[in-house]
Image (cartoon, rainbow, N blue to C red):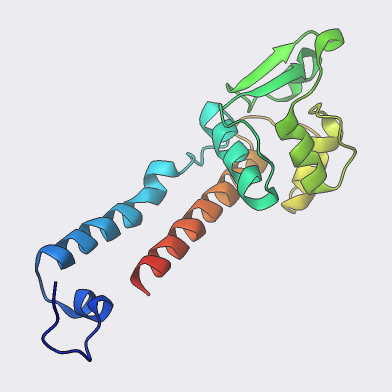
Length: 172
């Protein structure tokens, strides 16, 4: 592509062109970015399933540089704690307490919240999460859980901000 006006850069031409193949291609790229948050968003319903586990793993990787496996599973958690977490409906591996070795994702959560990091999700970690969001501290996650909703909102806010920044970079 040659420019008739050497004072007009390709970038400016693409931004100011009313319509044309390059501009249409760029617009199509932009529309993909605009719709990306809904495609990547976690449902904000107060229930923690595999989508929330996956979103949380991605969130920790992004904000802490964790390098977690993003498989949508919080691994090796003590089954004795499951009854106090009726808001967790999937995306967790509950095992016998004696076999629970903890999850790297929960270690990252615990480090993020500033509590003892053993990878085992218990009342102390839940209470720290509730404190982080300014909610009533009871150490449980009933469903639907305001604590899980707050985490889901934070995950989605990060996704939305990340996509907005990509969008800005593409058009600036």
